[in-house]
Image 1: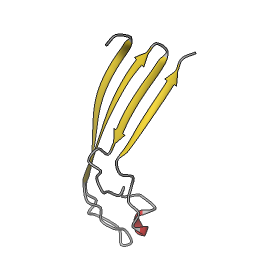
Image 2 (image 1 turned 180 degrees about the vertical axis):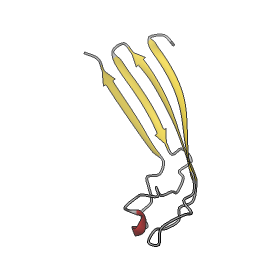
Image 3 (image 1 turned 60 degrees about the horizontal axis):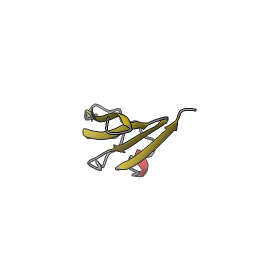
Length: 88
């Protein structure tokens, strides 16, 4: 803890998706990709804050089962999320 800030936590998360090369006649092949995320959380009395950055490297990817894939629309790029929770 730092002063009144408690429960400080830093987390790193990675997900690897393997290529999909064995496909049915109407399917498209999918390349492999890595997604990395990092989050920082802390508590100040009854307020909990979590700051998360997903897809840190802004990877250009499509989930193999995405319905938007045939339309050429990619999955979400880098994004930052701030969660605030209050205990009452």
